[in-house]
Length: 100
Image (cartoon, rainbow, N blue to C red; front, side):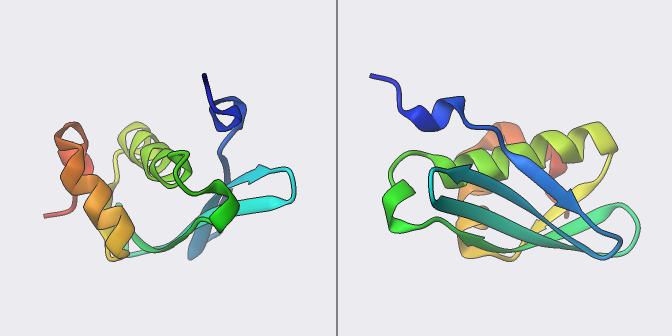
């Protein structure tokens, strides 16, 4: 059975210095925040998934969207958030956008 989160869209709110990715499902909202680190890099600094959405890969979807956006924009990701860092380690196919 497919989870209803598969149907949900990840939204991006991007500002000049900071931004976030979010998924809203019903009354619950998951988010991942980032800051710009000079030209060409972002720092993922926080991920929050409420208890009602845990276990549905919502956090992974947030990181995946950041990876896709980083690829299309030609920027690198610094994953300071422990969750984002763990996701980057679990997905070797995302290493191309990891800041070295």
